[in-house]
Length: 385
Image 1: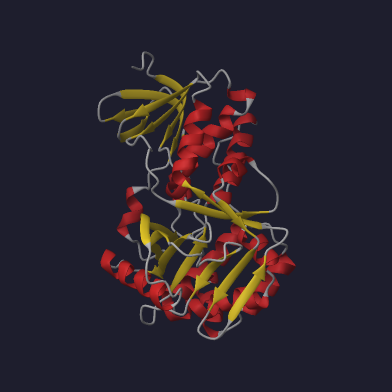
Image 2: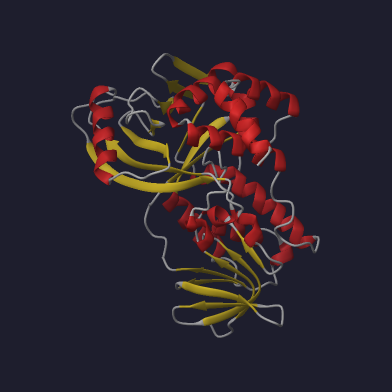
């Protein structure tokens, strides 16, 4: 029972962004006297997704990392590309492990409260507070971090490009050792659904257990049975596995878009996570981008700036718009695009580019590797739009 319904900060949504933000606050003495509430309609007690990312060094996430890899494979219809990632490692975290880790750490701090409820509305009041109405209560906060996607996004405004990264995955277990758990498959384009950008993603957690995921980068969704058919075909025809046990399944959708989520930020409400446009538009990556944006938010708060100030780098948003335009207008070229990306550039330069830490010279080399008529057209359409 919450006796005092006013908080310094309310975080709406205990997903990746909300929990990373709460953990960052809990580790900073600046927030030790601040009352912070996390509101979510779920207890977060099931494993509903897998987050994967690369990083050079050890981090706080090592304690809950399921597996890491030093070598990546990319298969296209024309070639096999093997990528030595050093000094990077590709790491994978099960969502249930992050949920449990965050709850364990945050419950050590008496100034954090978990509220299981559904948020209905947020309203900025005249006294510079935010009123948060849930299904069963009302709360106020000096500032709200809101991970809900704005309703305007679902109107599909023609001024913005919308692609959906949608997928389903099986975690399977075999009796025999089928997998090389030293390497993972980042993208395998050999199995396709027509002239669309589709690929299979394989994370071997051990020699007998792996996540196999079939992914689309398309405008439209498919029936769940379609994913199942492609996953089963891949397991049989490409992995050559006839007998296996399905341990878990996961299914998801990630928006890849140039929609201006940031315009929904105000002085007292900051949109975070997918709802804040923190998913990288051109790839759907979010884990490390979330970590960086949270660090910037904490820096802004401590400097008495608006929390959402300077969260995005304009030139990378421009690159993402070009990529999205090509993928929307020439969806069949997805295989070619990623083959060029990783065949003509080192994975280290690619990771810096995707992490938005590259130099302008690096970016010119990457753009040159993708030099083609569709990219030229997309460049000028984006430049003059």
